[in-house]
Image (cartoon, rainbow, N blue to C red; front, side):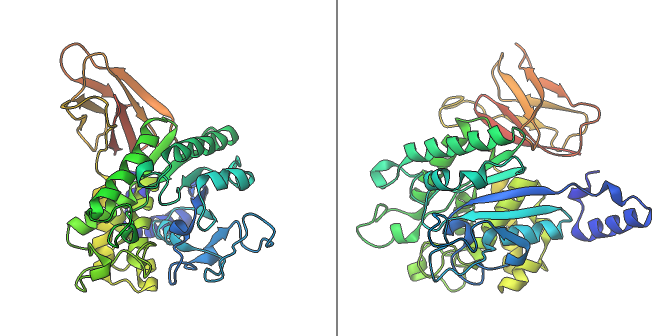
Amino acid sequence: MDFRLLSPAARRLGGLALALCGLSSVAAAQTRILFVGNSFTHGKYAPVLNYNSAAVTDENYGLPSTNPRYESVASEPGPWGGIPGIFKKFTDEAGLNYDVHIEAISGNSLQYHYNNALSVIAQASWNKVVLQEVSTRPIPDARGGSRAAFYDYSTRLEQAIHTANPAAQVYLYQTWARADLTYPTSQPYSGLPIDTMTADLHRGYYRAFFSNARYAAVAPAGDAWLRAIVAGTATRDPYNADPTKLNLWAVDYNHPSKWGSYLNACVLFYTITGIDPRTLGGAEQAAVALGITSAAAVALQQLAYQQVSVVVTAGAQPGAGAAALSVWPNPARAAVQLGGLLPGQVVEVYNTLGQRILAGVVPPVGALQLVLPEHLPAGVYVVRSGGQARRLVVE
């Protein structure tokens, strides 16, 4: 059994038992992760901005005002913990050994990070790196975006990261629809539902993902926001907020509130670690510290689980009307069968380091069966074929 998939209480008891037996040397190796972004990563407002900052390394804190990475906004005092701080708390509670760093520059894009922070980002010591683009670049140019620049500089950063450490995992952190660009008049999405900007962001981020096989995954925070709205958990229009529902936006109708930040952290946690956020439970410590009720924490954990579990396929591949990739049994132990594919298609299975551990070709007749390696570690894997992807849990 994968020790990470146990409940937090069971992991703590298991760790104690190992120590008592003199087996503490099997403790998990430390994972070094860097979050790259702007105020959509650090959260901008209290209580999220500085949450758990003592446990997070703010790479830009204390730099002189002449440095292009200087934290220059007076209303955003550092050091920052932000959403990475919530993520760090989750990993601690899950019994994981994560060294969390944040390299955020308010109001700036991945292009700015590439030009001014490459010395921080392209280090061989990072096991995982999360990239968050400025909120408007992944939307269509006709609505004020700059997708070409987003694709260009996210790719440049991915290449720089993998040049420094070929085994590093690089994630894209999909942001959410901005209410301030939707509900007021004379804005890019005026008169349209909040779903429209969400869909544009989804297309922007997933197009980047499917065009570059070296990304580990997209953390679909923006999609999870829409799921929360559609489910009736969160308010749809913060300008006319429903007091019976959670408001995912902060006071500027742009940045995340504590509830939006918590949902983002849950999505990132499940995407990056493969651990079900529902195992954190209603007594989760970050929620308590942030003033989030037990019921709200459980609801947001559930929404993150549901969203990250969704299978997302590449737009034009395998083509309109094609069957969806299916994997069964899932979870699996010894073998899996694949359906919904055309004869001759290549199927590949990747681990969480982005390494291909198995491959096969769909036969002319019938489903493809893949026999899993005998000593394959338990955990979460990704099955990819023909522009489709599905999570596979190995027990």
